[in-house]
Image (tube, rainbow, N blue to C red; front, top):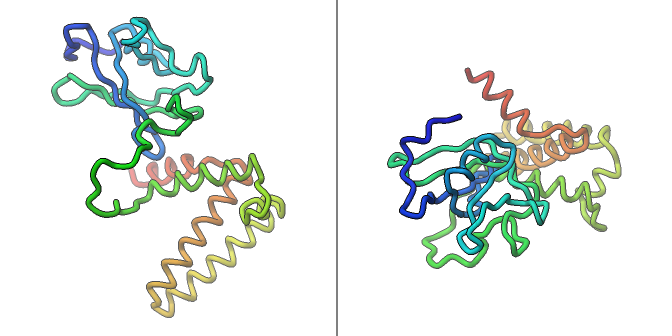
Length: 207
């Protein structure tokens, strides 16, 4: 068992825990843990909390099926807050939203720049299209055409990237790379390969 002696539980024996999606890094929810809930979370595989309203241990997902599969637990520099990285199995919020932070921002100082996390968000949408196959969706049509056709599209898009790059057309290259990444993610979904495995392979090569 991990050493919890450096943690500062409050006078009620609780410590706040921020839960973050391990893939997209989106903040999913904030709740409290007592020592037992933290020990159960560290033991895994699910995240546990302490419900202040019910005054009892709370196994997240036990009722809804929307479990949080723990990946990592960290304490902050003062030992008075926790960060839990987890894989959500369904919406984290009781409202049915993926995150509890779905309301309009109280303050906004301009658009937040996009980063590589958008790939994981896009893959989730692609997986949803694969499951639900909504009519009229281009992604649905790709899945219906099958992996060989999707693979052909990846090759076509790679060619478009090369043509745009050789022409030193930055704007068109950006668009073509976006098309290539999208079709590559669809191909991964078609053959049941998780992008996380690709990221892990890249991380291994970096070392």
